[in-house]
Amino acid sequence: MSIRKVSIRQIKAARALLNWSQDDLAMHSQVSLPTIKRLEANDGDVGGRPETQEAIVAALQRGGIEFIPENGGGAGVRLTKPGNP
Image (cartoon, rainbow, N blue to C red; front, top):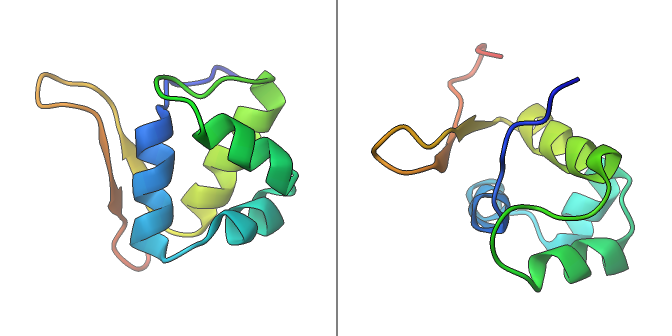
């Protein structure tokens, strides 16, 4: 599976849209809380192991987040409409 570039800022923004704490993200992604805290302490692209990033991104997407790639207008996140993948 190819991993899209996702930034820490996008992860934090996604959590804010879902009103998720770091604990919530850890629970939904099955990534340890210390790992979530360590990753979010940095800036730039999400670091760590590829499977860790995949788990975090997948959990946020299941929660209703769509990641918007850099397309000239800047990377971002948004809530998907109910019923949309």
